[in-house]
Image 1 (cartoon, rainbow, N blue to C red):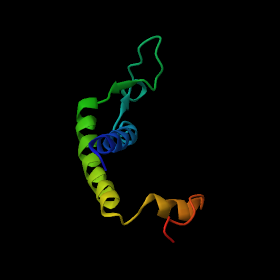
Image 2: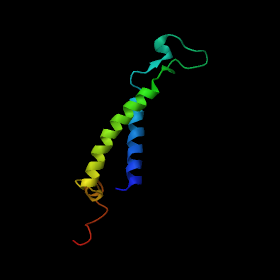
Image 3: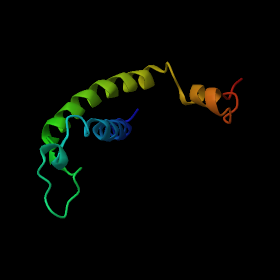
Image 4: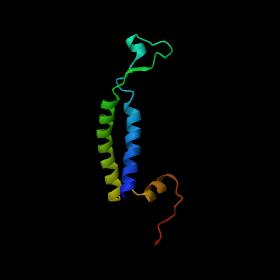
Length: 95
């Protein structure tokens, strides 16, 4: 895996994790009972995005290390995934 591939893998994991983490402990205007006119009651009042970004980064680093380790070790390859799901690649050359 090249540096670019590793960075793209980390970015994908980070954004997917961030979208999962954002709704945790979110306080809406409706929860606080202070709805600003012209906004929806479910609009966030307290979102703590900086804290959630740091939590996301920590979780993403752990997930990235596990996934990158699996990719680099060769335990699971693209051919394995293709064989389990699609079976389009055929046998490896040389067999």
